[in-house]
Image 1: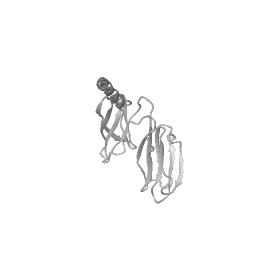
Image 2 (image 1 turned 60 degrees about the horizontal axis):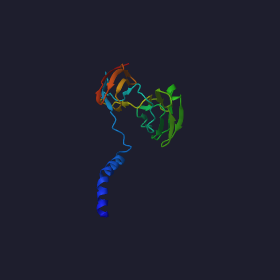
Image 3 (image 1 turned 90 degrees about the vertical axis):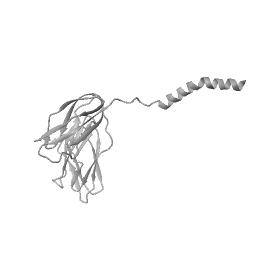
Image 4 (image 1 turned 120 degrees about the vertical axis):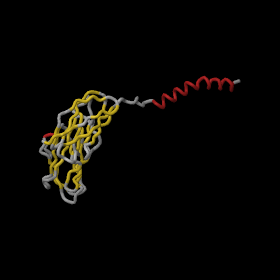
Length: 208
């Protein structure tokens, strides 16, 4: 009799146990967010290579923390990458991978007019960028070297490939101003409405 009662009790409690187990399994798992993406192509008149165009959302609601610790390398007498977008507050590592000494400095106020000095192969220096704006990087040892850091308000940006293609991921639905930046060309900003899915926005840049 006791065994029969025990089995009956287990059968009565089984549905509740299944519900509780499911609740534990999915506890703390946020509901999928509705997000979108922006994709397109940028062409620069008179240029075969359409790389190194920065496409970015000018302003987005909220505050955005720096993501990772990006690096600018000095390799083959070039800064790599040529264009680096970051969120304000990001610390950038500067590496020298060449067999000669390099220097990193900037005349840009957004870069705090830094001069990190000169250092040999394999060593790094760093700087935290706390002001929004364009930072032109130069080397006073090799005057032909130049690159750019763009310090932005949010992480919704992308840099084009050689064909001019870009894609900005994980954008919350809303109305934005989409801008482009290139060191030798420009175009007006575009208003854009993002919902779920992918929104297409193309740009034709004119050299300046």
